[in-house]
Amino acid sequence: MSPDSRPRTNTGPVVNFTFLQVTSHLIMASRITLKLTGLARAAGPSRRCLSTASQPVRVARGRYLAGLVVVAGTAMVVGQQSEDVWKRLSESFVAHADATVLPERLPFSKPGGMRLDPSTEIVFPLHLDPATPGPLLRLVGLGVRTVSFLRVKVYSVGFYLEEAQTRYLKEIPGWDKFAVEQFLAPESSGEGAGPSGETLVRNLLDRPVSCAVRIVPVRNTDFGHLRDGFTRAIAARQKIARSAGQLTDADEERIAQSTQTLKALFPAQSVPKGKALTLLRRPDGALTIEYEGKILGQVNDSWVSRELMLAYFADKDAISPKLKEDVAEGFQGFIGF
Image (cartoon, rainbow, N blue to C red; front, side, top):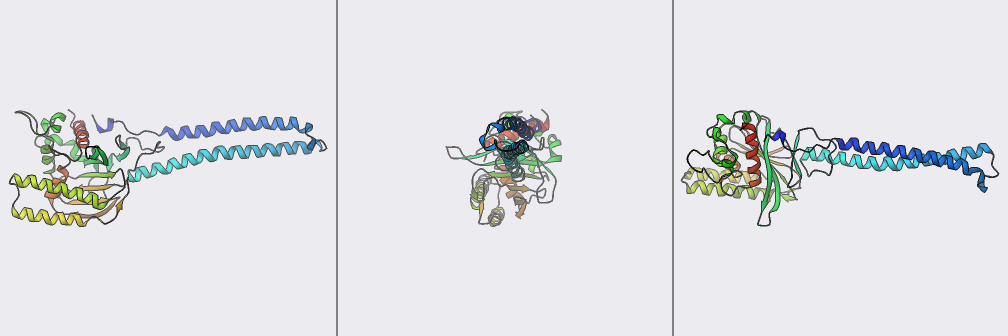
C-alpha cells in the first residue's frame, strides 16, 4: 500500500460546517427578533406604563427594545461560535508546526500533507525538511514505542528516507527480493528467501543516503531520559558486533568516544509532550540531532549513526515493532510489488 493511499486526517469541511451553524443561528435570531418586535408593538397600547404615551413614542420604544434583542442575540451566537472556531484554528496550527496531539477537529489540514498515528493521535508530516542542509525526506512509516509488559506508550516515531532514493530501492542489493513477510521475519528463512528487514536496511544505509527518525513523546519527559535510551541501544548493538568479532580495539575506543559526544549534545532540560526530536543520518554517515527545528549538534561516526538506525529494524528486539511493520508496508508501496 502506498503511503499516499493510507487514511489521513482530512477535516477541512469542519470550518464550513461551523460557519453554516453560525449563519443558521443568525437567521433564527432574526426571525425571533421580528416576532418579538411584532409582539412588542401589539402589546404596547395595552401596557399601563405606555398608556399615556403618544403613538410615535410607543413605536420608538418598541423599535428600541427590538434593537436590543437583535444585538444581544447576535452577540451571544456569534461570540460563542467564533470562540470555538478560533480555539480550534489555534490548536490546528500548533499541531501542524510541532506535530502535537491531534485536536478533536482539525479545521485547516493540507490535503495529503500529514499522517496520523492511530495509537497516539500524533500527526507526522509526509515530508520532512530538516534544519541541517540536505535533501527532502519522505515518510516511509510510523509507529508507537511501548515499554514493559503493560505496553506503556512512550513516544510515536516516524522513519524518513531521502525522497529520490524511494524510486531506486530495487537497485540496492537484496531489495529485488523484497517481501513484507520476510522484512518482518527474524532472519532469512530458507534458500531463495529474501533478506531480513535488518539486512535490507543495512544495505540501504551502506549507500550515501539521508534518512531520519523523528520522535514525538506522548507525555512529558526530558532529554536525559531520551539520551539514555539511545545510548542503551548503541551499547546493545555494540555487544552484538563484539560477539560476532566485527570490532577491533580501535573501533571499541572510537565508539566509546562517540557515545560520550552524543551524550553531551542533550541539554539538561525537559521535553514537553508533542515536541519533536529528530535523529538525522547524513549521506556522509554523520549523525545530527535536531529539536524543534534547531540543531543540537552532531556525531561524526558512521558506525554509531548506522547502528542507531538499525536498532529500529533489528531482526530481534526492535525498538518499535509497530514502526517496523508500517515501514515494511511503506517500502512495499514504493517498490510496487
